[in-house]
Image 1: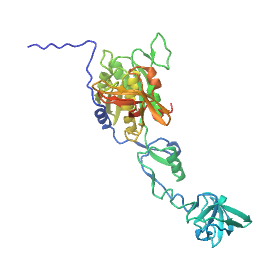
Image 2: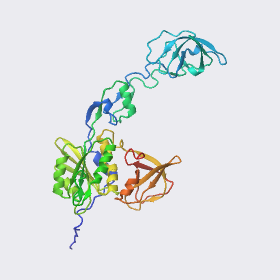
Image 3: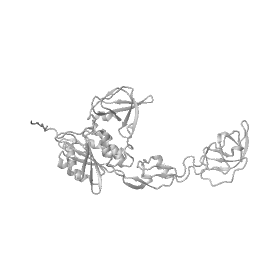
Image 4: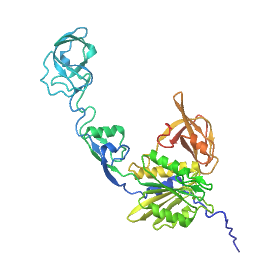
Amino acid sequence: MCILTIVRVDQKRYLKLTPVASALEALLGEVGFPKVEVVPTVESLDRFSAEDYAAKWDVPRFDVAAMDGYAVRALDLPDEGSAKLFNVRGRLSPNSADTGSLGKGDAYYVATGSPLPPGADTVVRVEETRFVDGDKVSIGVKLERGKNVSQRGEDLRRGEVVVRRGERITPNSLSLLVYFGVRHVRVYRKPRVGVLSIGSELVDFEKSKRGGGVYNNYAYLITSYLKRLGLEPRRLGVVEDDAEAITKVVRRVLNGLDVLITIGGTSVGLWDNTPDAVSEIPGSRVLFHGLRVVPLKPTGAACVEGGGGKSFIVLLPAQVVSAALSFHEVCVPLLSSLSGGGPEAFRSTVNGLLVRSVENPRSIEALYLVELRMENGDLLVSPLGWGSNLMSNLLRAKGFIRLRPKQALEAGSRVTAELLGSYGLLC
């Protein structure tokens, strides 16, 4: 019996479609412990801390006035409906030196943040008093002990962790580090990322456009996403659809990079040479090529070991919607892990109401771009039309939702949308 095998000349291979979860498990399983460096605290914004940093003293350091007013002893205050004169012993500001003890019937004027004099336990607000003459004030309210006072350590206790290892340094935590006099911090090094466009029809935007061709605009899409993550990507230009040329260029540019993102040549056509070219690099292992989700099917990833280190190559398809969504599904968790924050640190999701019904008729998972808008206090999620290369859709999109195989969602359903970048609602 003879079995006839038909080879299609217009197709080089069939994609082995891997579920996204399995692909990410294989990819992130190759990520080792992120490298650490020391940077000035004032330059550490949005970096991931490589160690815990704790409060060096109690905040506040001592009992302080929480209001402008008069510091007194609560037991000296009059009963309700009556008033009492207090002797004003002095005026205190936040930088005042120690004072004498406060005695019976005494008061000190205190500005907000001023240390309470010994013996005082309560602050009566200025608007609840009446100044009588140069050294007396009339108080006619009854307050419980500790009113309008911030107790020592009420905000932070000495030794309490203010920035945890693996936590992103925010404007708020950076200001606390400065407050505690931390001049340098240990952070995880930013991954070094390059973006390479592949396609004989492409023209490098930085060079003169002669004799037609298409500008490599998708390189700017991806590098812009990378900059939004706080990274400093390198644009590496264009290489033609030739396996040997791709291998040669990738080997050259990979040196000094943690991640190389290629755009184009990842599918199954005659001129889709990127997977084969990457496989020819010494020390290269293809982790997956093909994802079981549309429109990300031609996406792939490899790791390359050599020279005492490991680099990653992520192969993005050259369809604009596919490239954008592949970047967020594969590159974002990889770069987040390499940055020291774990795979979810760069991801942002929101919950909203679906404006119209949407259905995935396929037997595999599907991602749909969505518009987002606020209306009467609700976040509304509007699915956009289907198309892996519709630039107008990406122009309008703020995020995307995922549907299981054969899943249908009715209008009014509550859905979770992942933002296209952490600034997705602001763009």
